[in-house]
Length: 242
Image (tube, helix red, strand yellow):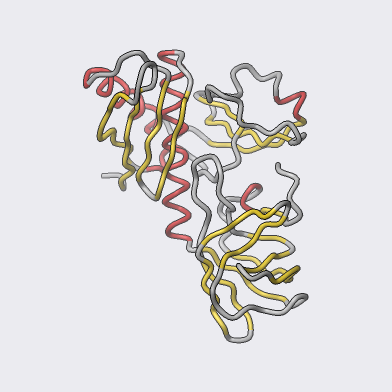
């Protein structure tokens, strides 16, 4: 976990939709809270949106921003008072779509690593759409079809997804914990959050995920392209199951 002053509840329970907490500070851009149910963004996953409720006001939160070690809930509306108790409610439909999408990328990454042994060079997502880049020399329609069949099998296996925290030294004893070409884990993080798709994939990761692969729905590879030498991209969508 990152050394943030605000406790990020999404790191512990991705299914928590709301919380009551206290306002720590008011800034021109938004509000800092003692704890938050909003995912702050990172690892390619966008930050949550939603509402802060106080004084019969539903204050729209349109994103999150880190300023130093502060985590700011971005808003243009009227703000609560420092010390005031508020209720935070995330846009759950959007969050759950991102959870499905993020786990879909981990399945894609896990299959590519297991079957082809190549690392991730980049990635990004929005609700129900994503792309991931791999250190591949070549990519083709046949390759995409092979990967599609493999990820279909993994979704159908109903693999459990678990989250745990380990001391950094212990975490890095796990083989191939970092799947990206560059280790993006800051050296100051001494407790590492581990996301495991049991039987397929285990990675250091800070994002939100569904609890079982079957909850993703259908992962569909919709495109592939070259982004340069040894850098090939797969694009996916996530759809409701048939």
